[in-house]
Length: 497
Ligand SMILES: *Cc1c(COP(=O)(O)O)cnc(C)c1O
Image (cartoon, rainbow, N blue to C red; front, side, top):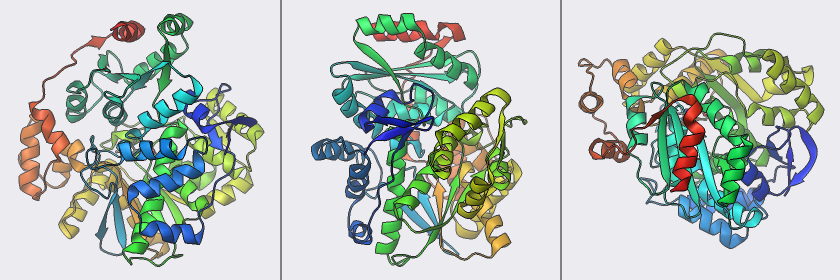
């Protein structure tokens, strides 16, 4: 299996190359040249298997340049009960009306980013051995919260790697900040930046393209790399939980083999829902892919009209991991829907860069409306969904998952579709405790995060997950705050050690 680029379909590289490089030289994203199929026998066979075995089967079709031993090592090191608080890795909770909540937050940082970032370090170090043997890999991450912590947990103390994370000084939730500044591990560094998320991201990009830094690091045998969501090594692991959930529902006799399901995904950068699309192409029976957005509803408009227009107001919402106006992974979807037409992709994404807007052709519009349903909701609607689901089902939703549940409610009312439905839950509610407490009608709001959380526990009879509780008594290790233009120096100083 080779990989092409969305902006150069003639390119052919191995998966190891795609994972080490992250982004192709001409700016495109790496895509598999064909999507491998799972036969009926294989899908039925997976019903009886563990998450690790299901992961192994899916990876072995995409990462064909990895040996069976290498792949086994990667999946077993990532998906175990040391890292996840359930042997099932991805847990399914059934709500009323045939809705299945797919809980992807049982990993060490309580957000779905763990599903990919627990395994990425192993995929990356294995790939690096093949591609750039002997080099140290230095990961740089700019984060608005969830990615930074998940990457730190994934890369901490992984041989041959180090990781530097930059976050906006005032741009993350109190819990997210605590999670990052108390991070353990010998090879990690965390630094606040005086600026917003864009400043962090621009600073990281500037380091990647700085020739002096590159040369200095090359002398020390260090190669810079990225853990952000356009890397194929983050996307491939996300296909697995869709395959795993379908086979688990068959095993549990909730559905019959061949029965179609809807999948609802709270969406930001379009990585998670794209992985569901890949699972469908592999042969998992899917009716509609339902794309749920918050007030930053650029994807809702795109799927409904075929016009992508980022020239609009940016909203800061209570579901901050979806506050995004450029959904990078959409480029991969459009590459597939145009029949791998790299000319069209170059044209559309050229327009996006120049004017912030492009319109796809009639054929793609038709496919979008057949495959997808898209909807959005605002913060008030998100909170009332949390309230309603807690009152009605005694299930506590986080703010991102609540967007998905609300958009699905609207879909069902509008279409009358009674297909059984998987709703993807991307974070534990205690990561966004303040908004959740407010939503369930909490009566004693207070400044202190842990006091608030104990009220939330008392009010709802639920419990804060252990990894979040553990941050309370951990020492703060990282107090540094850099100016934007100092970020390169921060990285070089850290890598000297
Ligand atoms: C990253 C994130 C999302 C968005 O996922 P994409 O793959 O970027 O669409 C949704 N919810 C939470 C909690 C996240 O951390």
